[in-house]
Structures are given as structure tokens and as C-alpha cells.
Image 1 (cartoon, rainbow, N blue to C red):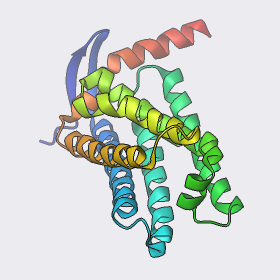
Image 2 (image 1 turned 180 degrees about the horizontal axis):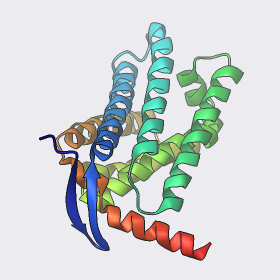
Image 3 (image 1 turned 135 degrees about the vertical axis):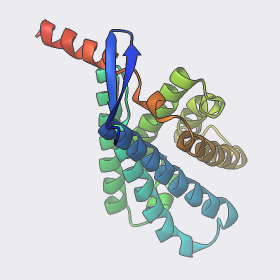
Length: 215
């Protein structure tokens, strides 16, 4: 007989983990893996072939692959605080729209436009703020060593480039570390037990009931 659900004891009662729940986690982790792979490939091209103009179009496509993967991950992630979840989704949307705007407004390829016009990071940076939100959630929930480094590293690099505070060598080092740690995070997620990413569904049910009572 095929098992369609599993019953668990949560903080506010029993709950079931269904096939749809598991599928959502698989999509979340796959989207994270795509985002990490696109980002890391882009960083590798930048660091290994910084003076090769033929990689610029590849960087644009890899960035949009990263952005799509991040967006799907944010729509399938399980976060108890609904407000935080919505804020991260809005951040991603702002960053995605800003990225398209930068790509259309500046004559240079997207990567060059963002690098040479740091002001563009005010909009594009919202995507990385959303990514940092995922890293923070994973640190808080699972105490992951790689996300402990990524939570401060990402905003320091983005803000450091925005205000021209970091040297090129430091930026390259931070970027390389970001790519490596991001890949480690994505790979480790693939082997994690699926119920851990679903969380306690009784908490979601309780929060939903409290919201309905407030209304």
C-alpha cells in the first residue's frame, strides 16, 4: 500500500506531512541549488577571466538564472513569520525589477553596469537582502556554519562596494568565499531530511487561526 502522508506530533497538536509538502521542499532545495550554481559559475568566470569580454553575456544569463532560482526558493520556503516571508518576497521582486531596469537603462552588460555604477545596487541589492534572509533563517533554524559566515559577508560586500569602502582584492576574496559557501550550503541542503524543512505544521495552523480570530 502506498503511503500518502506521515503523522507527527507538533507543539499545538498532530499534523501530517503529505506528498505535496515533500514536493514543495524538493522544489525549494532544487531552486536553491540552481541559484547557487548560477551564482558560483558567474563568480568563477569573473575571478578566472576578468579581462575576457566574451563572458559578459554569460554573466547576464547566469544572474537571471540565479534570480529565478532565488524567487522560486522564496515562494516555496517555510517560514513561521508570515510578515517576514512576505517582506523577503517583496525584496526579491524589487531586486528583480531593478535588475531588468539596470539591464535596459545602461548600455553596458549587467555585470559591468552594476560594478561601474554602484548606485544600481540600491535596487539590485534587494535581491541579495532576500538571499541573506534565507541564510539567516537557515542559521536560526539549523545552526549551519556556512550561513553564519554568509549572513554578515553578503551585506558587508554589497554595502562596501556601494560606498567604495573595500579594495578590489578584498571584494574578490569576499566574492569567492560567498560562492564557495553558497555552494556548500546548497549541496548540504540536498542531503538534509525533508521534514526538517517543512517544520512544525501545527505552528502554521495555530498562527493562521490566531490571525483569523483577530480579523
